[in-house]
Length: 74
Image 1 (tube, one colour):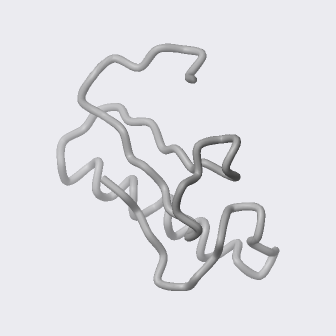
Image 2 (spheres, helix red, strand yellow):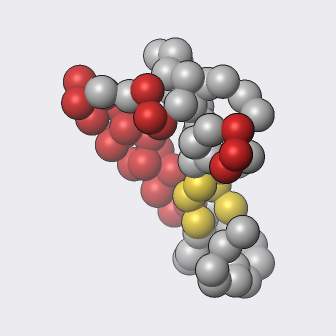
């Protein structure tokens, strides 16, 4: 699942202190979705910058679940 804000932010790094409430809401939306989908565990990922794999210039979170997650990621 993708969690995407309506407000345009090119990346997580382009957010400001004024976006703190929005960023918190995005994480809560992810938690509520995971709860409604009965996902006991999940990973929330935001790629920041092309070298990190960001290919869309709009902040979004990837909610990953449904399989064991290895550590370290990447």
